[in-house]
Length: 218
Image 1 (cartoon, rainbow, N blue to C red):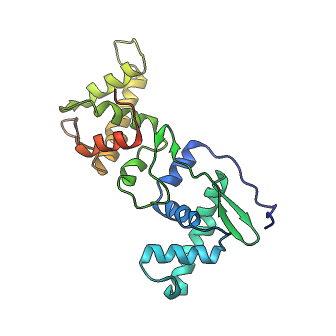
Image 2: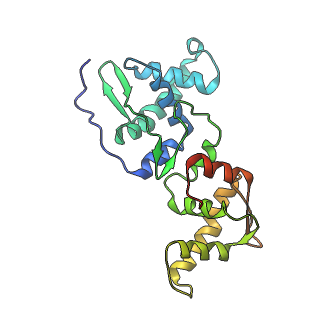
Image 3: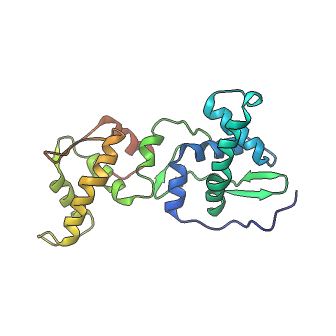
């Protein structure tokens, strides 16, 4: 089969790769392509994707359903996958590159051939965000409730800071933890966060995820 020269692949950064792997539709696309030994036409990919998402047999997918998927497929999904070099286009169709990514941002990930695998929702909030990975790693060792200030202090110690007073950067970190990171981690049940008391308690799921993705919690 011959390459289509006008669409070369380009290397992508970890943030883009992480956003892809945190996207269920993108994981489903990679999973579908992984099962194909020959290039897959865009229409066939769109029909298979619509079937996966609706539970309808591919032969019974309405044209309107396919067109809805096709728009996102062509204008977002495939462009992102191509930008990081995870697929190649040929005149006959699309091929996913091998080997599939199983590690990104220092995390060991589930196989993308299993896009519905347990813990993908939790892992997706860690991908591309080293700060959240540090938070989860630190909390894995905390058997009791801690405060946001205590967590921020542990993060500062881990980053080898010898300062004993808070700087503007520390205050900014506290704000980000309180308003962004901790609520996101709580939303996927990695921790319980009392925003009024500003206290954090890890969940059993957090420990499972740390062990699954290989975060250093020692």
